[in-house]
Image (cartoon, rainbow, N blue to C red; front, side):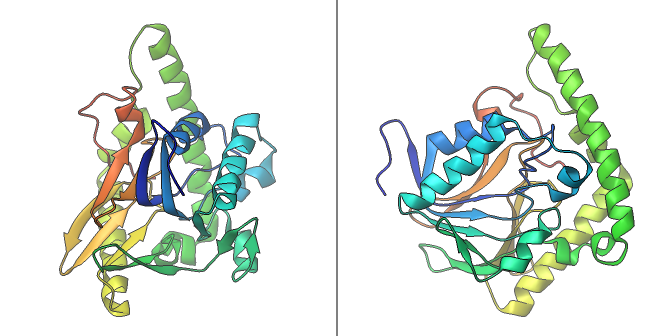
Length: 264
């Protein structure tokens, strides 16, 4: 698939935690990213659609529909598109092994980079003790998180009116909560352990809205982040090099020194 003029081409792109169907979803920024970046492989690493939120009330603006259409159009043009369902779109797990519009639904998948490294691609909620063993608590946390995102949206609306750039209140607060930091650390350790158990070189996941790429005792842990706060994606260059792209920052919508990490 040849890139358009002015479009950057990568070998692979990973995005997750878009949460279509919620007011916190940064669909316009994601559309901008997809229009500006193409790839041979596109991995949708879970929580693309927020079924939890849609069950409580329907919210689906045109921009959210445009994201779905853009992804389907990419598959029609020849990109290899894989959908790894997460906990918020767990209903799609009933369709593992099927294809819809050229998008293959898989439980997880091993991706081989251009330089020969093998990465397990998985959403990661399977390794979240709260989601696995106390789902009611996860739903309670989701409601609190939604309220926090609403505050974040209002706060940044005011900032734009005053001429300031985007700044995530929720990310700032969560980075300073000790329990959140400990939770992220435990999650990353569990995913790295799974990579070693599977005998792969690394793992690519989402779920905790915390973009990160770092070696962990012989494996490379990669989290592609989210599209409600940090607006990040993981990309593979043609030579196999992996990189986290902070799209909002690249569009000068986030201050350059804004940390990428943002737990949810």
